[in-house]
Image 1 (cartoon, helix red, strand yellow):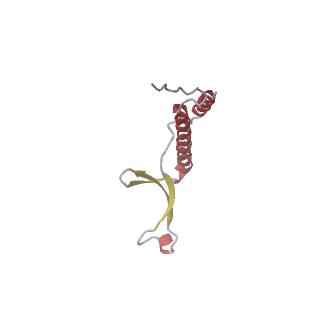
Image 2: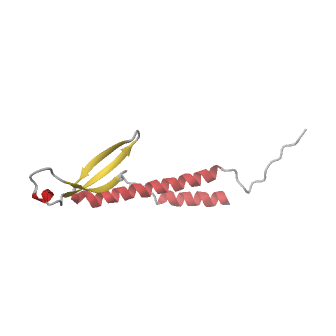
Length: 114
């Protein structure tokens, strides 16, 4: 009975997976860039706000990509799709771990001592 409920829960999670190529791992940051000379805006201390996508890789490497302002909403959606997919995969893995456990309703066999 528990196994059937677990399988049904897993089936529901799988059916809701956001299957799409529009996924992106990383973080979207806003930064202020200031030029050293010749920019009146930077000389006033305002600087220029830019968006940067940062992605960490094994070995402590981080890659940063500049993002055009008009693409920010699209990138936010892709990042959200990634987080949703990752959460769903983790939930499915937990259900699968539960399925690997011995069935609690099944009677335990006892070995005969000789």
